[in-house]
Amino acid sequence: MMIKADGTDDSVTVPSHNKLSKTHCEGFFDWSRGQQIGSSKVPLYHGCYSRTQKIYHRRRLINNLQSQLYLHMTKASSSFVGFGAVFNLEFSPTGKILVAACEGNAMKIYDPLALSQIQVVPKAHTDCVNCIRFLDDRTFATGSDDCTVALWDFRNVKQKVTQLQGHRNWVKSIEYSPATGQLISSGFDGKVYAWDINSYSSEAAKPTELVCLDRLMRTRLTPDDSKMILSTSLGYYLIIHDLDLLTLAKDLKDFSSDDYYLLLQEKDPKDLTNHPSNHVFHQKRNRVELVMDFPRESYPWCISSLVVHPQSWCMMSRFTSEMEESEWTCVHDIQGGHCNLDKDIHDSAADNSTPFHPQDRLLYYMSERNDGRGYIKELSVSPDGRYICSAFGDGVRLLTFNTDCSELCDLNPTGGNSKGLTEKCRLISHKRTVVTSEFSPTHPTLVTGCLEGELAFHQARL
Picture 1 (cartoon, rainbow, N blue to C red):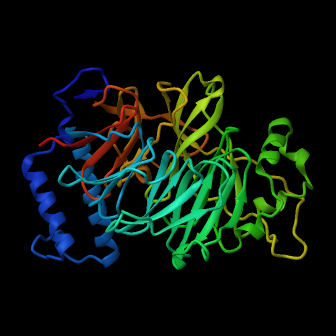
Picture 2: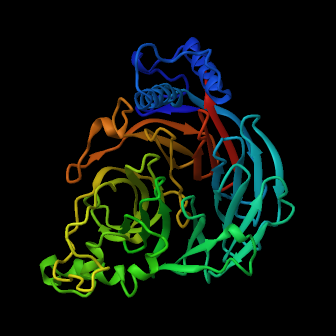
């Protein structure tokens, strides 16, 4: 059942500019299939356009059409996993495979196009499976409460490709850097590790510690590999701009973001003049920024869910307030963060005279229900970046930046002028609290998972 923002349900009425005819849908899918197989029988443009213009307008056309499809979502199928709560969902890059991470040490693999289960791995780990990350269409990694990271080949999941050991607490985040071929993992031990997985052997793939952060919750790389974002249980984010994974450990040696954040809470930035860590905020590579602005009266504490916009324009997060009285979803700008000094850490005379001054980064926010206390509610973002899917009781809400479902680049929001997110609709598909969701990267499909272990597939109703 779909519920609109005004509380009415089922048959969704949308403004005329959002209505989508069956002809439009068929044309869109015909064109999409033509693009996938390299057909030129479905012309998209006439006239003289540069290649860059064609790519740009093609992307905008796809986004505009697919954006309308999300407003016509309905539950198409469901499946009970049978291994406890569904903690995480991940599609392969082409959207042909879906993997579900389960509380009961297991993972399940689905064909999301046929809405059918393919395989079950009942003992993927020796404890809860928390996170999944695809490296390509057949290789993916899983992280677990057993403190390990496992590599898998979709063609044979009867055994792991390898198991990576190094964390001393639950593994909660896995990222992959195509530029360096490194797998990035982080856990509640506060460690961010880089793994050279090209060797595919436990003996050779020894971790390199990149960052140590006592209150670390989640770690994300931006799609363009230019930034690393870390969320904490102290109520702030750490952004590393102009990321260089090969020198990160060296460039941030002896820097404690927790200590600096607590000083900023107690003192004016000018009182931190000549602090020995000031240079990390101004260096040209691996430049650090603390983001610490939130909605009034939100009292941020544990930032447990973190995703990045597909175009690397912003980050979306969900956090719990102090005393777990409320939850909030926030959108923060992550662009910019330019180097302001001529000197940097790589100079022999690094300048520590200029303290860090926090910027206003908050763009949008939304208050959330605090159902299922103690469980992390994972956010997801649509491939076009226009919709944020957020757990809401036994369903989810689709949140947008405005009532027209505009792209962020068309709105040009600025920090310091934050606004409330717009609720476009609700999808009620479960009997217990929803804790995770994921959009297909290639089809108008949304999958949600709940504490009861039910998986629900939502597709556009034509």
